[in-house]
Amino acid sequence: MPAQSDAELDRAFLALADPVRRALIARLSRGPATVNELAEPFAMSKQGVSKHIQVLETAGLITRTRNGQQRPCHLDPAALESLTAWIDTYRLQAEQRYRQLDALLKNLSEGQKK
Amino acid sequence: MPAQSDAELDRAFLALADPVRRALIARLSRGPATVNELAEPFAMSKQGVSKHIQVLETAGLITRTRNGQQRPCHLDPAALESLTAWIDTYRLQAEQRYRQLDALLKNLSEGQKK
DNA sequence: CGCTTTATCAACTGTTTAGTTGACTATCTT
DNA sequence: AAGATAGTCAACTAAACAGTTGATAAAGCG
Image 1: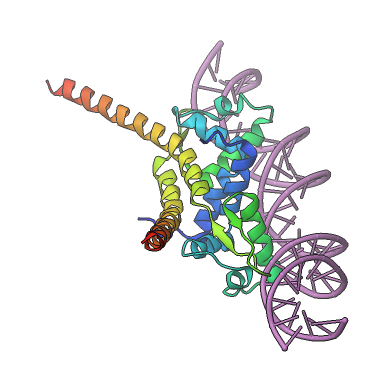
Image 2 (image 1 turned 135 degrees about the horizontal axis):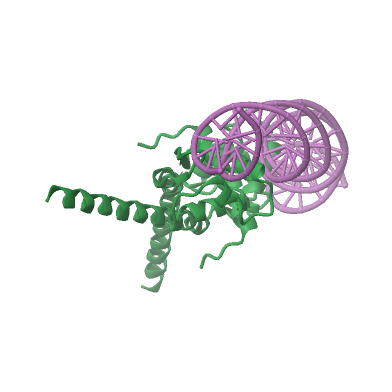
């Protein structure tokens, strides 16, 4: 399922690298919301928030629907999952290496005790 | 353990938002490496790679040790884990909402059948 | 002590990003 | 049709980033 391109990962991680966009994600994890609703808590123009939303959408982290003149945003859990999958690939590999190293060191010290 | 600041998350996700830095992470997941070893595969100056390494280090994703005139880099699995933890917080919440919505819709259609 | 290797620091350039304001599109309301 | 509401597009500025080259530091080797 993954096999995400460099450009896709670039966009997704870049989208997460901003406190406003992370706050938008936190908000959307509790349910869909319109641009106005999303913009309300921020000391920023609505256009500014709209830009952040576009970054999230281009990154594939959110989707938009149409409801009259509103265009609600929805968080896409699958997109988030593919990011944790990428990270975990390398995290688990590194952790396994550390475990093997620990075991090796333990074996060495056991040998010395004898 | 988390409670990571906005600035920390900014640095960490920004560090991941670059194909070169992700390739460095992939390499380091297989074991420590020096700057020269890390720079070798790239069509880029060693200074350029060194900058990327500093970004990863400032983000806390890697640590450095000293071995003679070499300064090997080591991937820090715990730092990666804290990022997946952040993402999963919101991913799981969104997934749960979708499951509840599915259950609700299923209940409604069951009711109609009767 | 020179000389090489490893790596970083400093200054500079081109590109991208974040935010603003003002004008515009599209939909709903009366 | 006129007006209000929701949102985007376009142009601009200030700041941050990616990469370069050149000089420097620090450790190992002859």
